Image 1 (cartoon, each protein chain N blue to C red):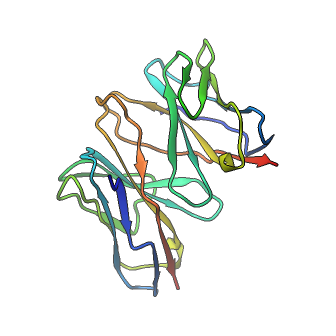
Image 2 (cartoon, one colour):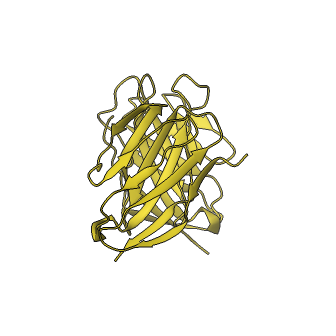
Length: 111
Length: 115
């Protein structure tokens, strides 16, 4: 699986959009981009994933650049409950069972 | 739906003791995983399993053993506990990669202290 690079920490004002970047410059054509988050010391929670098209669900939007070397997770209206560590993972789905995490971005929502 | 259930939630072990961390899932998922998370750090994969009877090492397998006799259960065994194994342990499961939705589900964790 390709390596990812994320900022260590970010702040965002409550009610504003939180934009979390992820670089994955060595991504290959069949690798998906997944996002998970971990609130305080709970188990991580799946947010969204995509291959090359932008994706949106009830939690967030995922924007993947045309060359697929980077992506951005967007939380449209951040709330205090969105304070968490956000993990960007690049992973082949076909025949790949492993799921490994990096160090993630610690997002703090400021009241 | 219970999802992924881990027991116990907390445990204190003495050096050299052994214990088994239990993990059960009721979603009929093929894949199961064990992770450890040290304070302020990310998750490290210990072992994983792609189905009953099949297990494989992750990034940090030393000091641990696993078994997968059923689809539902994936226990993690510590034989000779050491202070370096003080951590929070998470179990997770996910469907086969051919499933429509391949997201992983995590348990709430077991906080283990070895003294």
